[in-house]
Length: 122
Image 1: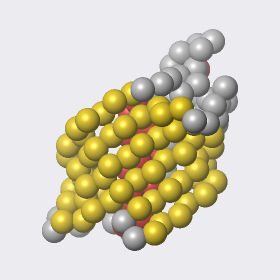
Image 2: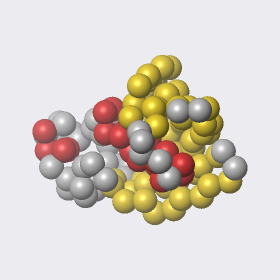
Image 3: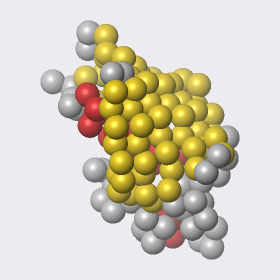
Image 4: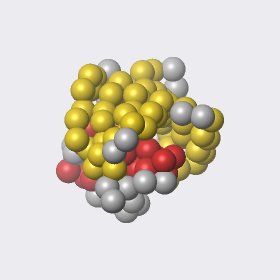
């Protein structure tokens, strides 16, 4: 985990190329003190890192983000109000790359849609 203590994985299910994970955010983490004081917002770069780490867990490979397309933040994730998020990933591997399509939700709210390509590190 790149950012220690930011989140914990409460559930992780892999079925074929699909992964469903529930992640609990740590609202007391220092990241939220600066982003933004009094109104914490989950940074987009941290969400992308969580997706990368879940993809690494699913593929058992170390990855490097090479392309992120169709990145759409649909709702603000405030860890004080919504500290549990659900991520759905569809993962496909092709030679030296891994492609991921993700949706992230809290309650019934779509918060993030992302398509990304990761290079496999050797």
